[in-house]
Length: 100
Image (cartoon, rainbow, N blue to C red; front, side, top):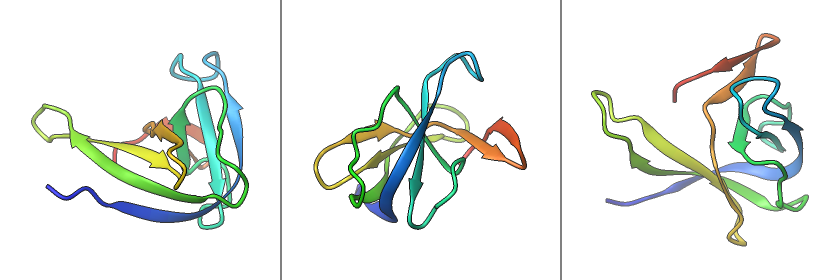
């Protein structure tokens, strides 16, 4: 099975949401040149070690067992900094849990 990754632009910056906001987890919200508003790309973590200008990719990793085989994704750069993508999104001024 070939694992490929999709370029989602260059890293601009990030924001952190603590566990008290939603879902009981720490999330980092990543802005790139392609997705230049917070809310489209979120990953699990307290801080983001990407550097401004890093080329950012989303990579499909594997499928969870289940009737639909939900895929797990990660967001990464070329320097081996990797975070597991969350399924939380900020849409229409509401924090939601989305499926890919």
